Image (cartoon, rainbow, N blue to C red; front, side, top):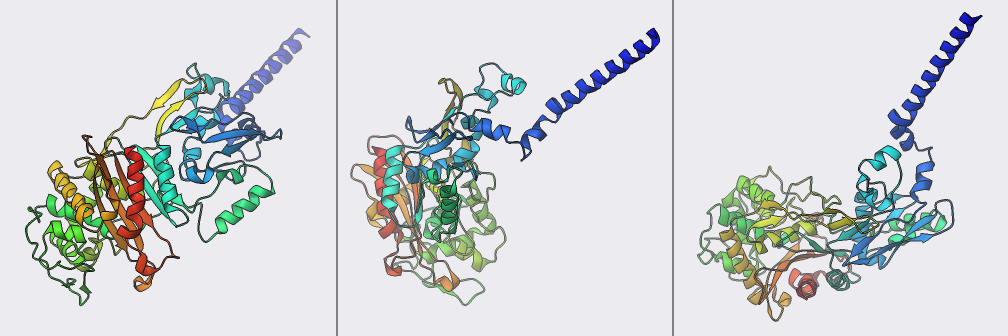
Length: 484
């Protein structure tokens, strides 16, 4: 009898150990799999059972949370939603998250382990912390100036502080209100369909995710390549450039809108934007030199995060000389985001150093404790300080007496470059208007801001589209706001 009891006890003990091991397997080893299972609603309910942390601009919150008293209790709200949508993105209970709401989701939702006061506490207890806050680099007056300048036109503006890489403004128009996507009811579903079905593409972040032919603004890169490789050593010396210029191994003749481009100096060619001079210079520099210089400015970079992902700006690495000539004036397959072209202007303003652009300045816990702080760091050495100095001189000349005079600001030194980019089949599309620039207050040691503006307004008269006429005044107001 005692032997039977012992065997039964041993068997029960074995079953208990097996039960504990299985419980451990489920709760520890396979916990993440169960958490990620779409049928598990517990995490979703817990996620929306507390207010989401906020995204701040200049110390003021541009997001909030609304108590709906429903099962998914708290919905996201937005202050000036269309103004800041290209920065915040959306946080939807149906459609997920985008932009900063996505990249900073762990902090905002309270699941980031760094929010806990005790190290490893979140991993051990799986306890959700109060949502943390994300403090951006955006300056509200600069953002508003860009948004107001674009108005009802399709386009984008990106503004950077050259010395640090801080993104001061990020605007894309037309925009949308992210708050209409926050809930779970029919209005959110209807808004999602309308926004995604709109031909104006209001949910497309044109500043970060859309690439355009940069047109003549790319001549900054071509000029840098010519100076860095020694093809040009004196910006006031004739360049031996014909007008018109027949593309190599082709019968295509390239012409100019401006006069005085034949055998023009690099300085004059930059002021009036001579296509023939820069196409010829690109061929003289060669494919390798042009690609290397462009990549130093940030082109062909698949990994740029700010932290939202930035679309790759492209310069082909395999071209014949005719294609290289067109690429050197920002046409052919050369394409860039507005942020990339702001980076080009920032590299010139930064004496050749290109700082990595960033959008998040500081992350804090709900109690105000600092979780992380961004430290500026150099992204690339785009060119030598000597080359940057000569490019500054040329960009200032373009504003003082060239194609960019409408960007001039009293009491400030402004450098800029206009661009009109052809596109469409046989260039039949309305040209995109570009302007890139930087500005320095007269009493300041370094430029305070670098800006890129692109306008793709398909409703505008083709004859009225030009970087100097359409985009430069917007850049001027953005720079004026940044200078304060």
